[in-house]
Amino acid sequence: MRENKKKIIIVGGGIAGLSAGIYGQLAGYETAVYEKNPLAGGQCMGWNRKGCHIDNCIHWLTGTKKGTSLRKVWETVGALEENTQFVECDSFYTSIVGDTRVTLWKDLKRTEMELLRLSPEDETEIRKFAAHVRYAAECEMPAEKPMDAMGIGDYIRMGASMADMPKVMKEYGSMDMQDMAGRFRHPVLKALFTDYLPKEYTANSFLVSYASIVSGNGEIPLGGSLAMANRMVKRFQQLGGKLYCGAPVSRILIRDKKAVGIETADKETILADYVISAVDAMEMFDRLIGRKYMDAKWRSCYEDSDKYPLFSGVQAAFMVERQAYDEKGTIFFDCTPFETGGRKADRMSVKSYEYEPGFAPSGKTVLQVNIAQFDQEYLYWKELSKDEYETRKQETVKAIEERLLIQFPNLRGHMEFLDCWTPVTYDRYCNAYHGAYMSFVTKKGVKPFRVKGTVKGVKNLYIASQWIMAPGGLPVAVTAGKFAVWRIARKDKCEKKF
Image (cartoon, rainbow, N blue to C red):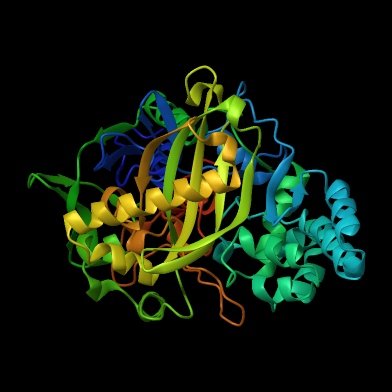
């Protein structure tokens, strides 16, 4: 440990920012995180309404399997502790069409048998799907060091550990979810494979996601998103890191082509040896440093929402009596078409949090509905006046309630509205570009987005954000924080290993 520690300022206290702070402390730096909101966590957040807790983020957490490099990262940052428990969940999700339902179970053999019973005529595709999910279970996100810093030996080891992944890419890498669904004859299977992710999503990404559930590498930590973020805050502060909440940053100071600190919203100048931007990437370019530093690669993605779309959602939460709702997990079902955000919805998803008894009073549980929205829908919500916005939200809630009661009539008289939020909510609270809660969607035939996490033309400025690699999400965020510090430590020839 050096006597005169170099200082790193981190702008943004989400998962990436907290990760950067923790790894910075472990590497021997003095770190300070500045977060604009009253609580750290970014989009890994939850809030309370009417005695209930609404969870915003974790549907499953990739990297929970012991022995994996990503599990080690989650443990290092304190997100997963020795006594962290996981939800006893036996399914990924269920799709219903009419009176027929089918589930993707955690037990892959059970899924395979259920799909075969439903549609024997799809046997070839069902068995092919199951076989490639098994292959995809080998897929691991590199978490030791950035991919651009990997050598031949690293790639050889990675290839050996994921020897069957090329089979997945060969079979499904050139198709999206709509193409995959088109391989099946049964209408319920067609719905099953276009329900969970946007139909534009690459099919291989879906297989990897489901494989993480099947292999035990995608569990749900009990307590939810906010509890996990708070564990990381605790770890950061125990290591001596300084966290400043309710402390928005107005700009990153750049002098002589080098980041030298920040200016806070109240015009205070704070200097540092390094700055890590752990906010939304467009927020960084648009406000903190200026668009003149946005290179062609970033600009081409932001300017082409057809090739690089973003998705968000209109969501609503309800408190229901458990005796009136006996479903578990996430369910998709047909509904009478209605419009929200200018987009027609004819299927809905509802998720039950019955596995979190602390999220609602005794005898109750929280249900959450999510309706997909994209770039155009964000613009629709954004352009509304305050009164129009509230009116449209109320209309959406009413439409959702009506359709929940049609699908689950036992809920009548046993359901109470808690809250509704839209893509604009993510923009307002997290500065999320177009309300996106993940990075750019990777479409078939389009090169997946990935950058180093540095800013051309600016020294000592690093990006720790889910935006540096598609599809984003928590695993990219937590490793981006680590990798930003890895680059700084390597520049300083720091001997600390992490």
